[in-house]
Length: 228
Image 1 (tube, rainbow, N blue to C red):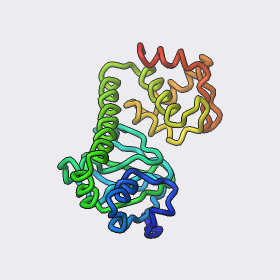
Image 2: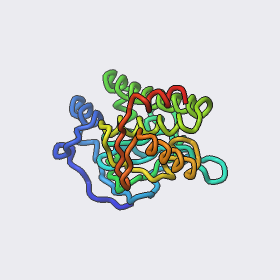
Image 3: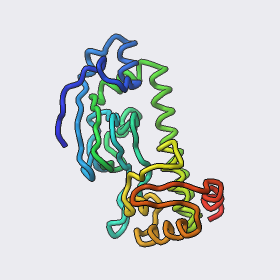
């Protein structure tokens, strides 16, 4: 990790809800945001670390995960541009309850969590926005638990491919995670992940060319995801 620079929010293209709320409350000079760059695989935060900052993904992708058994982690969520890290702190949790690592070179904007807490308490609109973001994140994790417990291997991989497609807003995309990460997102081994991808390719459901993946039959993938 390296500090890139102190940031002037007025010059930032993101214009996140934290900045917009601070501007509305006339406290934007208190933000003092900082940009950090994390290299691929670098840890952004670790479970049980103290939450010191609200972190916004400015560029790149990161994975939110929990530690599993025998060094096999479970990826709960893929974080993309404008996603938050550390929301639980404004609701009373002083420690991170998950780990986050960069999938590729990733830039974050860090803002002191105590200021964000003050904004959360004193601005009902901002409170509602953060609550919605938190609920959306919990909803994704709850769906993940259903998948872990009830779906077979093919259904898990199909679900992950559809999820990544939605994140990229396209059925044609370059997968930005390794086969190992795709396995951890699907809660199966890397070997089984590669096997299922090969099956989908042979069944003409997807096309694979290196890291390029095209979802040829989304309707069939959706059926596999639901019933598989």
